[in-house]
Length: 257
Image 1 (cartoon, rainbow, N blue to C red):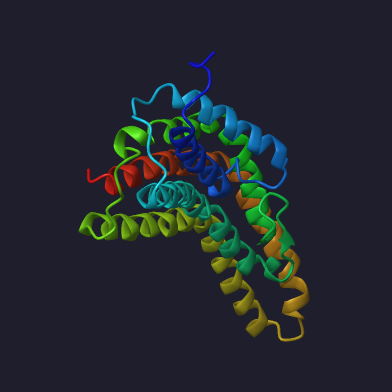
Image 2 (cartoon, rainbow, N blue to C red):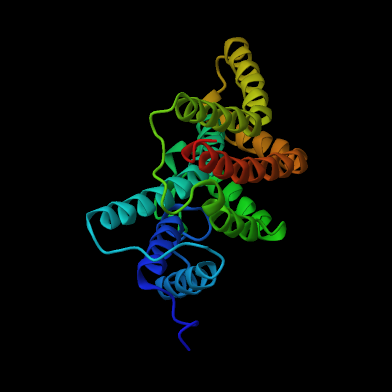
């Protein structure tokens, strides 16, 4: 019976990292998942991970409080990196909505509770289904499980290293590059449509170009997205892969790798 009851000091550290990870990481942090399910999953996962760790019990003192704060920070950072990378979908949707004229019609994203563009919401749901289809949620759980190999429980992260700053710059660059790749077909096509409408407005002044141009731009945008949907799915799948690798690379950087 004693073997089934973990040491409280070690179990608490595992639970803090897993719980903080679930607060920010995509899919597990969505509001549509009940809080009771998140808490239960964090408890069960922390209890299972405890028996895979070869760590001596800690003593309740000032250093242990610092370890608890460190575990919470590490869990939040790992999940936040995944959220930032997946936010490229929202950025791409904002680019497209701005060109289509849908920027004034943002809606509430039920997953995150934040304002979301219409096309970005469509891409977000597509990424959510694709994440489940390729077992991305299992890879996310693998990330928090193997985080103890790259960043042990009794080791503090290294934020002052040059590789940490380089990782942040590289991550943000990749996010905007992928967002531009997703939005480029629609944005480039709408630029040509705007150019054609501008020429039409000069040649036919009697035509109300604002009334005619709005439905034309919407129709062309949906046609381009329907044509390029296969490419966009591949880009979203690449984005999910980058998210998994980004979480792993952050663990390696914080662990001194």
